[in-house]
Image 1: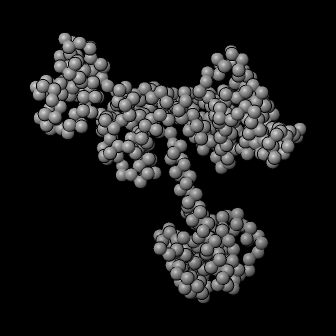
Image 2: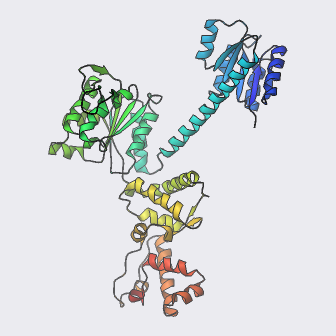
Image 3: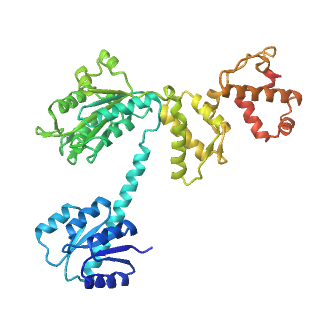
Length: 464
């Protein structure tokens, strides 16, 4: 599909000249004799770029540019002028004009502006799409009271410059909290620099955080800018800060107190304006008692403490998370959307999730890739989740059978599962525990019956 180019100019000769040049090159031409008409065409036709005359009666080019920018900040706009001044060009650039072209309009100049503007428009759209995808991956999913408390803490902390200490088990989403704080802060247009303190060897972490000068140590063949300098005017996220050595902790404390860093091998201090967000899965107060974490640094970091609850404390969020991850992985792998049965979802909710959201995410990805059909049932879950999701195991004696034991279910799900188990045991007994015959009698595939037997822990030795 050819690009659509709008020319807003009160001179018919200019519009006709550009129409001839553009249509000869295969572009689709749109013309407007005034700023008002041009704005209406932008709203109705969504062109890919605009040529806009500076001098027009009524609404001039600068005012039209201002209004067009309010409609779209992505649309490339090239200004046309017969007598441009430096002030006009500066004002147009400040308002977001892509370029400037002077009359008389040369064919090559016009086409060069078109190619460059369309390429910029494509890159902007691609960048916005990538950012939207990245934000979707870093979105916090859930509506439980526990997560709402975290969201409220983020809302209060984000607009400030206070340091934040995020605590919680491994895999709960501490990085998502840090990114949400940055995304909603006044520094959101600046860099978010992440450092995993546990992944960097102790002898290299100072160089990584503060940088080093060439020749400052063996292997330092080039000067390196540290993470704190890279994050200047933005946010630095110190993940697993509890794994940092006491020596490095002292230097980080100095950055927080003085707002300056010193590269390894240099005596010159460099001022930095950085917001620090730290995270850890350790109990730092216990680490202070053991002497492995500085108390003064702890107080500096925990101006605003945020605790992220483990997934087992918010099981009501699991269905939302499962659907979110399932949709995400289906899109990434070009799969058709998968349906998850209520029984499978209930099993996922009952699992303890020691690895929290990270473990759940990996489980959903494995389900989406490995499930043979478009419907994911209990049998498609990993064995660890299926075992964890089974009803309480019956007494291991023939005399005391679960199917014979009166028990009052407390939920609809328990009632359904208990009824289904009793039904299966009864049919198996009627058919002398012949799996094929029982499956045929109850009208289910033999493979499905095997899954049910495994799920409900039905065995002839126990239920015979």
